[in-house]
Image (cartoon, rainbow, N blue to C red; front, side):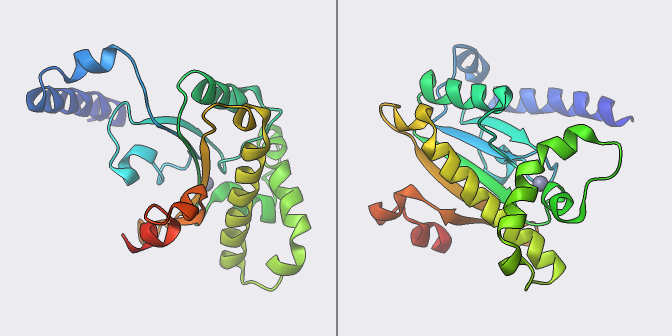
Length: 208
Ligand SMILES: [Zn+2]
């Protein structure tokens, strides 16, 4: 069976299974969405937002791009943020990076020739790496990319919090920076606005 045929067959199995558990599932789903979370993650096939968080349809509003960047001059990314904050009124924005990110590695090692879109896309990552050369230069190659991925998540969090969209939203969504570790399958909290709330803070999440 071809890969695409298999996807279609699996879709039928998935839909049937959900309908058997809850006959009204899809009619409820069709009525609208009110996800509490905007997830901004990497396009990497190994970091599927819903799968790694056990989230079902309707739970996450998702935007994925190479290296989970949030360029404030990009209409695609910003329209997602605008809709999620302004219309869906999400309570949380999660920016999730991951270990072994190819987009981040390309920012350090260079983009293959003849890829102008990718080159332009990861230019902010190259600038970020340049600004942290002293720290990154002390690390072995693999650790260097993972540290840059962390620094980038923190930078995206800072940029999203600074947007007028988020600052003026009422209620203002909380913006979180997470990292996904491909080796363990675990999420790690880098920056969390819930930290002051105790039970929901990073320590609690890490221990869970
Ligand atoms: Zn990636």
